[in-house]
Length: 65
Image (tube, rainbow, N blue to C red; front, side, top):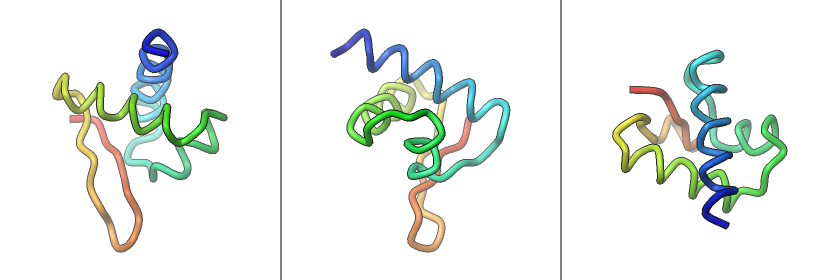
């Protein structure tokens, strides 16, 4: 599962670079991945200090640092 999470982390990073701040549900939908893998990928990127995950209203959002 770790290789899949790493692959999705790359896809998340590219999506955020091209599209800016994005809601997590939108990432799940646009990347066509399950939410567990997207959250794991966001955790990976957050640990590497490459993304911020925050709440805007009631929505979880992600953005590049």
